[in-house]
Length: 457
Image (cartoon, rainbow, N blue to C red):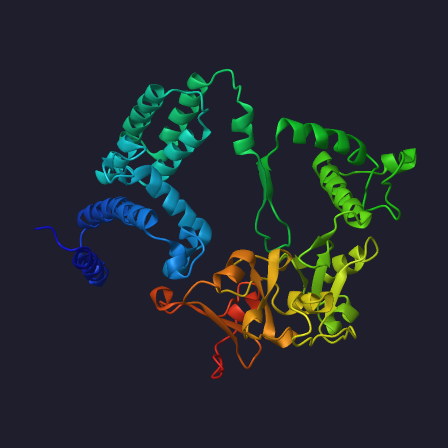
């Protein structure tokens, strides 16, 4: 008789604990190498079990019943992993795990041969990522039989070669199956996108992505003008953004083409912000919103300011930006003079309250949520408006749209602690000891040693 799921998981934890407790210092090199092979085999096999679990949950679970808006958020919160990692695992399980029809009949995995090789322990996570990436890139017009033959070829290579060899095979196979490189409009639309990566230690942010032919043609025309030598040069006392630059201005421009492209895109952004044609975003005109302290602002140094998008902005850059456009600047020691306590006279927060929330919360307050202030809504954290909640700034907090609506589902509650932070209390089935305060928008809190009153009532 096969063991129960709980017994098998308990045995796995016990075996892992025994392995960790083993003294490796007393073993020979040959024994260490053999043990390394065994550990790698188990590492390759574990996703097979996870795929079965995730597919069963995805097919039979309504995440709203468990206090989450999506399956990826449920998995992420329960396991304390990122939403991106949870989405990746669910997508991989959908490709490699067992499936069932609507009437319950079993189906083979989408990538059956890849799943079989993984179940044999013959391929690792890198192999799987490369094979799935190949099929994500393969054009839609490639027929089913050709796809199956391609998978067989790639799995055969993966079983006997490292990921580097598999990448070579993928490149060649893609070139053979799609030599003309012509993609349909639907395929191009599927691949389009621009991603701004995480801000690095020096404040810079990487950018990557794909432009559609229309988007490229548009930017080509704009950059031909604004990224030309002498245009939009921040080193000039009065950068040229209209008309043609003087010859002397062009001659002293030592920027690279890539740097000129960057400065042109920045100029385009300033033009759009200054146009006043963007309307409002969550109750405020679309503009740059920044929070800082009066001391740092007066010294023009110190810690960077924080934007409503969650990025850090050095103080000299903030002061320089103020010369180009009107921005909302929340200074903690200042006072707007606008009403911050509205009681029951108004359900929606006013602009002054939203600015305070940008400065105080910076983004969604639900633990683990990375949505920034620009994309957050105002949430009545002490008591919902329909339950006689007050529209007072001390009772309000930021929450992204899905999390704000999640309060209407059973199990979730929020409250304000005595230190002003918003605490999210999950339903019992999701409560595994996670943090109830979101410090992701306040990394300085993450590095602060816990105080005795770190969890005030």
